Length: 452
Ligand code: FCB
Image (cartoon, helix red, strand yellow):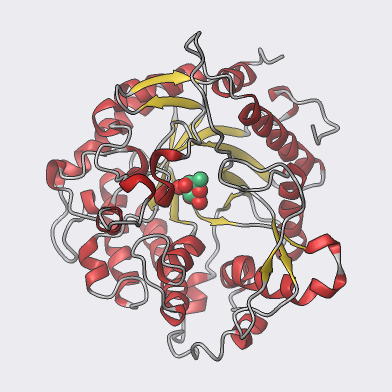
């Protein structure tokens, strides 16, 4: 335990939001149902060698058909809120075309169930399932994609804004831009650094345009963006790695925090990347749009990042290090205190902005025991320690207002396919049977005040 404050729901303010999170492509399946068109993840996962085991989102958790039972599961867990994402390829299949009523009707049904169960819906507009047609027209490296995204945002807001009050424009633009367009390990699998930098900016522009849309069409709502932030540590805490820390922090965190919360790109990041591209893709007025006030900042936190001396993205790469902390099945180091440090850093450097942890969780090699249960002690400890870290951040004065566990269900973990399980509920993919794991049972007890 990291916290000095006893861990109970009563230690949080009464209006602190506790939820669970998922994303459309990771759980829905039904990829060809009711007018949905292919996304970049359909294409990527069909590419030999791209995803572990050749897994795809074709069926996933079959949530498209099983959503009533999944909402009942959430009601039984006792969560206040459910963060999910809307699939652009269901809602607006053709850029500039007509909205797809049968795609929208799926979300109508989900919302009916959620509202009847007393669960507040939080919708993410973009959790990486870009319509393939838009990638074919250039994807995020092309400026037009930001405007196409705003068009889709308007359709979604008009159709669902009467029932969805909390909107998140983008999930983790860092991953979409850099894993998708530079590292090539996520869809669309491109390896072009300049394209990735342009993608990052156009994602930011899309966020700014979508915020404008949401302000106009859902004026009573609460709107923000979700970033994956990671505290950057020098290997061994040694000063000789300070330059590596600066560079990686710039490319991982400040490249998004600065434009959104300060209205500028960090000068050092612009200088570091000048050999890759100039700034001609940043047009007058873009940064004003991008830095328009947000109602909250969503943060996904999983692990701290350790770096060693070197330069990035210049001639010699920064070395990635480790600090001998326990690691999850993803190989991610576990450190709940690093989450508290990251939260206080955002407050110290960027001022007071309401913050929600919109994702936090861990993958482990779960085993279904002979008694039928999943006794996921490590995930449970991770959950408890990170909830305690939320209390520590609040005690340090961070305006942290909520926490969403990733994930409700085991699901399609992108390039890792179904091999990595993050759920607090186990999914048997052969039968689609759901089993609440020990971590999920503890979360339910915590939420109802019965935790031990
Ligand atoms: C985040 C993603 C989420 C999930 C977790 C493990 O980067 O937003 O979809 O894959 O990682």
